[in-house]
Image 1 (cartoon, one colour):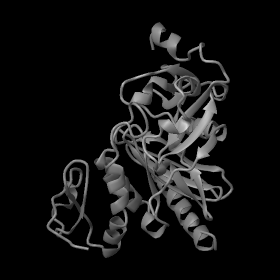
Image 2 (image 1 turned 180 degrees about the horizontal axis):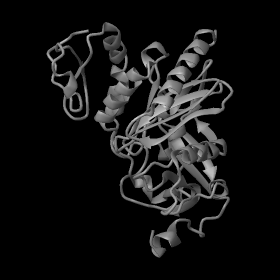
Image 3 (image 1 turned 90 degrees about the vertical axis):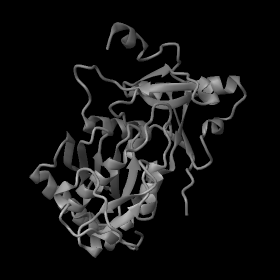
Length: 147
Length: 172
């Protein structure tokens, strides 16, 4: 990681109380046993080859009078939220990452993983981090599963 | 279930001399790609039970989990299913196949505090994680090209105990 990338891993312009929304694909909503469901560890796990975890910033959505549900690719997805401060508590960073893939992506951000290239997190550590982030999240809308 | 002459998928040359039996399954690499199976109706039926899961996974479009998320590689799904057969998963409750944004896939079982996850990364490596019924870690396999025999045994035992627990749970 060069110094330029390092500088942008966490954007200090984002305040801790900024709310981040993340959509939840129905495949991440798994059977937890005994008639319950839970969120898969894959939902918030940093995977090799992925720049970060996709989220959307509430302030940018509000500035365009958009509701959080507007980020959903379709109505089968669920919706969850956490704050920038929640991510930072777990030593993650948050950066702006707007792109042109979807019109809503002017509000796109990434949660970045807390690691140095010399000492990458193990899969077990990434799994624990995933559940720590999920524990801090609020589930705002359940995903719809096919019958 | 219709069985047709098989086109042998990559990675299965050792089975070329077996009698050709196959289950037709849609993939993202072509309209349909037959899967060579062993001469076991039980395994064939078990694989057939994943038909809609495989279709769901292979139909995911790039970006399904946000910018930069990849399609699931169908070869990784087959590899995962072969691993699950080796683990004796046929005797356990059907797992859920969960896509990974990197293009990999994992199988998950949960029952109360017990969790078992076995997956294949976007590079084709295998990983696994399991807890016992008290939620204590019993297996943690980092990305690897094989499952060491001690972890294989523990994973099989974990699957067996989870299957027992599910069988005796009236709410499961």
